[in-house]
Length: 285
Image (tube, one colour):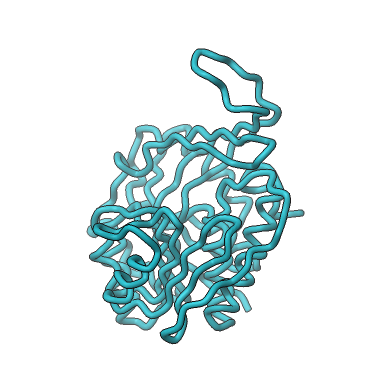
């Protein structure tokens, strides 16, 4: 079955380098490999969602800068339809510089995110939720996200939040969230460990919560009970975008499976992606 998913948030242009070792101060290194791709949590999740034959619809801020055309060309190849909140915007979209250490697959990222690319609720198309099966919010377009999450809840469309890190205003979205998928770096105010994160989100009436921890087992809450799901053992080539790809795969599986099964299957896809350089090579492997 083909699903239609709405992915709300950040779109960047990623410049990705694979290097043997991270450079020291005042040192230059020659990259072993290099690629350019559209990036951002919601964007990568939309691409992963399309991997299953679905249609990913990306609500973001892109504009008409020449760099934006590179992003559009990349996403066109992956059945991702762009809905631009500010199509008349002429300055550069957010650009990320990413270094991947070949020996470990670990990545370092420099980006300004969506700080200078914020949409507002007046720019949301009236029919944006028409025929949508699931909504994912990555936290980078908070005003728009809070309006859409509320509307989706009223229409019984499941809402997933990507809790990569705490972002101001997230508390406005949580009352409408069905599934909170967080990273180990997600700490709401006053939270210092995973137990407190679970308690915080449960207090927001979120009954399905998961915390991904890299190669460590996923912690999750389902039907009032906590448990873990193991991660496949792999030789990681590049961990860039693994969490985003996990979220996109989860959005596909949760429309067909129960929560623990969806988490388990999404982890298989994310682990597959880590065995390839960049955020796209895994897609057609």
